[in-house]
Length: 175
Image (cartoon, rainbow, N blue to C red; front, side):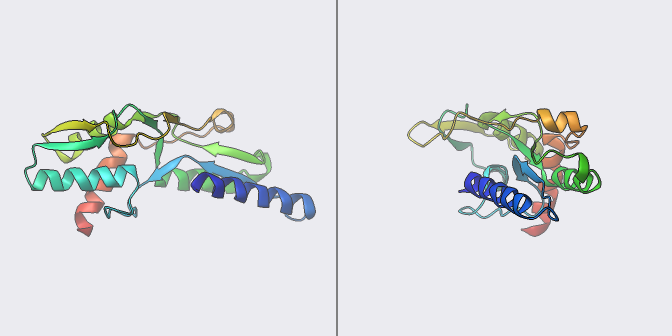
């Protein structure tokens, strides 16, 4: 659904631009985003906030192990939300040089296991991880091509660990 929404938005912008020369829309297509205002609830959160919530409660409940669905080898790209906001601000200033459609991403993906390890380090969770191979894994890899973004001269500046640290501090203030 999320991918379909991105494509539909681009197609609508393309149609409007073609139909009316006064409106020349450009479309930025971001990779997965995480950050301060994510939903951390168990049934509504995406990967990073779900792991933060899961490991936080595993830590405070002194759980020795945490389950990871599948083998943990699937790879995902996430970018801190403020980086996307910075890209949008730059795009507004550079609207005339932007291509009609451009991906915006971090340029790096990590395995699900990596996300668990990095978030565990930030949270200081010391337990171990077990893989439930009966659970779904999803697509093997999701990363956007950022060649046009690189040509445009923009890159994400917040590292995964730094973004998780900022997000976790915010999470602690919300719970």
